Length: 410
Image (tube, rainbow, N blue to C red; front, side, top):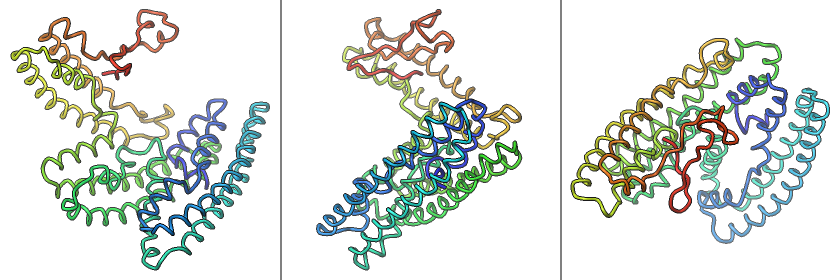
């Protein structure tokens, strides 16, 4: 189904839970259409295709002309679908009848068919310009497009499931000598990952088609089964990424291996391995030109301690998040069974408390003038008092430092 291109089963089920709200069907509709209203081929996508297929200048020129025609046709199709969407939204606003979103499924199916036919025509015309050697590289392009289209579209995927290791390696810009050891790993990973993505996407698509029916029938047992199947399929994608990253790390020089491992962690758990408030505070202090020798030595010792302890706390927090993801259940997220997400709160608080303590220690070796230059974390405010400036904490605002950049919280 069309909606599966965007979110997948996990989002479908969570949206089904949200149907307890009045506008839930509208939310599901908007979530399903968001990615569907994007063209299958764009200028950027054509550039990537040209690189993979190794098109010559004449072929690129022909491909660009084909793309222009495709995009004109696409804009006409999208315009018609936008009219349908607006009509459905208007009818729902006036009637509050949830059957609107069921009725539009048939229209969405026809839209999907037209979009696919349009893309197939473009692809067929493009293939006519290719040599036999270039056609042999077409499967590589299809795998790349599948990664780009489906790896990161699910906002509730498992941590690390959406990390494209091939893109991560490209970002590192390794030397040709280093790539000699990395390339065979990427070739195996590309094929393994593609199999896992195809399996996961099929399971999500099948589950998405049943989500509405299961919710209406209150068939939570079947919902739970499908939810678990989708998660197991997501685990295969996540683990393929992890295996490839581990293998690549093993063939890199020590310094590059550490950097690549850190980047993979950051991409897998961005909320954990980001550049934290305490790290920024120590970096700011270390750059101060008026530090005494004694201050610089003390700050260096504290920074080493901070880095060691944060590495442990971050890994602990990432493990807690992963445990939480693997223990989620439909009924738990609806308050009818095992708890939903949020099991990492204790680990998060432990890290926050440690960082706060280390920043206070840092301040203790700085002068008041130096302390004033440190970044300030956003206050942890009671959300009930966080509107209109009312209450004890209501007037708190994150301070802006030089350049107007807002600082993150701890």
